[in-house]
Image (cartoon, rainbow, N blue to C red; front, top):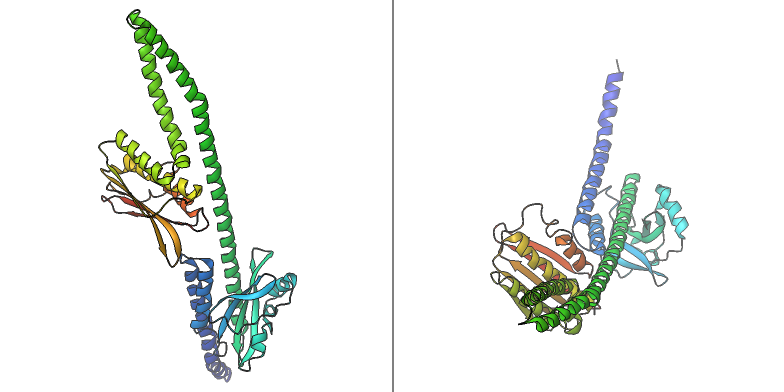
Length: 407
C-alpha cells in the first residue's frame, strides 16, 4: 500500500530537476534556431560568424553557471594563431595553440574530451577567468579552418548538453566555411568561363573580318568592275552586277553587325564611353521608334578590360530584352563612377518602361545569357547585381562593380 505514495513522492522530488533540464534543452533549441537564421542572412562569412558568436553570448542558454563572457574565432595567419572574429573586443586574447591538426581532429571526435582548456595565455593570467574551452572548426573533413575559444568565468560549468551545443555550433560554422570555399571556387570558375567565352567571341569576330569580310570585299570589287564595264552596253549584265553589289553590301552589313556584337573593336581602340555611344547610335538607327538615352557621369576611363566588357554586355543584354520581352517605348542607360568610404566603384543602371517581369521569369529572361548571365559577370568582379521590376512599369537593372584592383 506504500508503493504509490513513495512513487508519487519521488515524482514530486524529480519535478524541479526535470523542469530545469527541459528549460535548458529549450534554451538550446532557441539558440540553434537563432544561429540557423543568422547564417541565412545575406552577407560575408565573417559577418555571419560574428552574428553567431554574439548570439551565443546574448542569449541566456544552458545552466545558470554556463554563461560565456567572450568567444573568439582564432585562425592561423603567417604561421601564428591570431584572433580574427570576436563577440567582444579582440584585446586580451593571447592564444597558445600547440596541438596538431590530427590531435584536434581526434579531440573533436571524442565528444566531451573535445573541449580543451588552458590554450589562451591571456585567460590563464586573468584571475577573474578559469580559462578557455576550445573547439576546432574544420572546413570539410581535413582542413582546419580555425579554433573557437570560449572564454569562461571562474564558476563555469559546462554540462554535457552545453558541450553538445557548442560542438554543433562548431560544425555549423565549419559547413559555413565550406560553403564559402565552394562559392569562391564557383566564382573563379565562372570568371574563367566568361574569360574563355570572350576569347572565343574575339577569335570569331576576327575570323569573320579576316575571312568572310575580305571575301565579300573581293566579290563586291569584282561586281563593281563588271557593273562599270557593262553600264550602257549590256543591260542584263549590268543589272545582275548591281544586284550582286546590293546583296553583298547587305551581307557585309549583317556580318559587320555580328562582329560588333561579338567584340566591338571600338572598345579596344577608343574605350568604354565611345563604345557605348556608338552602340546607342547604331541602336537608334535600327529602332528609331524606341529612344535609348545614355548618360555618363564621372571619369569611367581606365577601368580595365574585364569591367569594360562586362558593362558593355549588360547594356547590350538589357537593351535587347527591352525590345524582345518588355514591349518598352524608352530605354535609359546611366553609367556613373562614385567614391565613398568603401572605395571607388562603378554604378550602372539600365531601365525601361515596358511591361515588367512576370513572376518566375527573372532567371529565364534573355535566353542563354539573360539575367543569370549578367549576374554571374557582375558578381565575378566582386560586384552586386539587382533587378527591380513592377508589373506594367518596367524593369531596372542595377550593377555596382568595385574599381580597385580591377584595371
